[in-house]
Image (cartoon, rainbow, N blue to C red):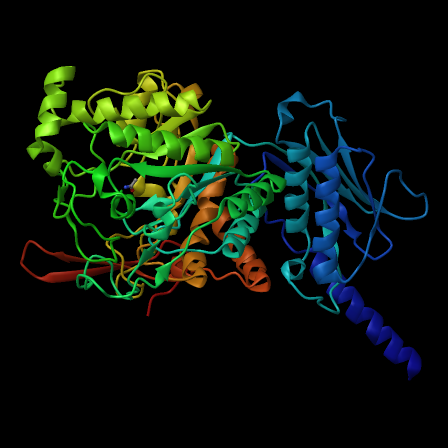
Amino acid sequence: MKKLLFAFALSLVFAVTTGQETRPIAIIPQPVKVEKLTDSFRFTESVSLVVPSKNAAVQTIATSFVSKLRSSTGFAINITDAEVASSSSIVLSLNNTTEPQLGNEGYSMEVGATGVQIKANQPAGLYYGIQTLLQLFPKEIESKEVVMNVSWILPACRITDYPRFAWRGLMYDVSRHFFTKDQMKVFIDDMAKYKFNLLHWHLTDDQGWRVEIKSLPKLTEVGAWRVDKTGSFNTFSKPEPNEPRTYGGFYTQDDIREIVKYAKERFIDILPEIDVPGHSMAAIAAYPDLTCTPGTYVVNSGEKFMEWPAGGHFYGLVDNALCPANEKVYDFLDKVFTEVAQLFPFGYIHMGGDETARNFWEKSEAIKGLMKRENLKNLDEVQSYFVKRVEKIIMAKGKKMIGWDEILDGGLAPNAAVMSWRGIKGGIEAAKLGHEVVMSPATFVYIDYMQGDLSTEPPVYASLRLKKTYEFEPVPDGVDAKFIKGGQGNLWTEQIYNVRQAQYMTWPRAFAIAESVWSKKERKEWDDFVGRVEQHFGRLDFAETKFSKAMYDAIVTPKKTSEGKLQINLATEIDGIDIY
Ligand code: ACM
């Protein structure tokens, strides 16, 4: 009987093991080359992590890898600088490749029965190799707590991998809703897992100024706070003059330094955005003299303050723009960019430049005087005059300027990089003028849009399904690829009230963006991607990261036929799904 039980137990172990071995390799973003080998690697407590390099960044990578492994497996593995004959090992080798194509961020990896070898030219490559290695572990590796009874078996394989673009970004709007320092760290952790390397931090807007500027304290004393309202932005009633401003927050300069360091350890740069001359109500509430129409202003609490005619120019019901004819504005911006440049080591500063309502400029005597003095023919040229002066300020701080594609209007500043969001045409125009471009077209990568039908999703004014996001291609036909630095997705937060909702909007669409900016174009394949996304849903569950399953929802398209009948088309974006 005992023998029988033993045999039964053995067969169970075998079944589990076999089951684990046949788990598909499902890496996001898809690596350049993956060869599946026979065999597998079993991760146990006796595995050691071999790190010959004394490089500080590599040591940090090793320590955080060991701590990640410990959280879910419970195994406290040793870091050593040389292989131990008796134990299998995971070896991280720096400067040890004969593969120049790996560049600064690539890696090669071999997983076999006796161990794992990851090689890279630079620490970033080792870091990305580890992110891939973690994706070869069973999904339970993402758990924050120890998971018992898991066979930590990895499929044997050989991988060569490096990114297509150097700029792989996500933008996070912390103005419309504020997210704390710790919440930002969680977002950064999630970005790093999928090999994003750029966090574009939208720090200022009409609804809140979120970065401490020591020389301009009112920006955060006044500009960081608004009336707390819940519902649909743009529909709220106007705040009463004495209504308490209880919603908001900001990052102190120490907070910023802490987050910048945290991101850097995960090979993520932070691009700060100070959005001017429009989107400036929070700054104006603090310093009303910065408009062409000084008066009393309040931080916007979600009440309507602008008309947004389709295809037309914005029309401000309240003036939310800095005044290009006012010298105090440039003194103000000099102070802001001095401190921002010191806080953020990244080489670029984003100055916004989008969606400026100019109807208050149009009526301003000061603007008329500026136009005469500077021979500016129209408001596009007034805006361009402003942008060029901002570029001079930013360059004087040793940084390059980037702005939304409206900075092309009226003439681009000489050294500016352009972030193309109104489709790709601004990016094409800028690249043809020889300027650097980051592609971020709303039509493909605005992850604040609903990801399914209005009837099933929390309402936002537009929709963007996963499949469309997956079609994102940063290099348009006919454009010299050398001007396209990369691409990014944008998470605007008017309708995002908390972290769970932010995660729901981000995942899985950010998988699609990660793959568009990391993987080779010819390695992208929708059906295969969907299979991998499904594997990663299991990983997100263990990580307690919220995600959307809208890719399974029907696409509902009503239309009127030529006979005047209403026809409803039902389709799916994934093959093999039945609609009931
Ligand atoms: C933008 O979406 N206004 C850049």
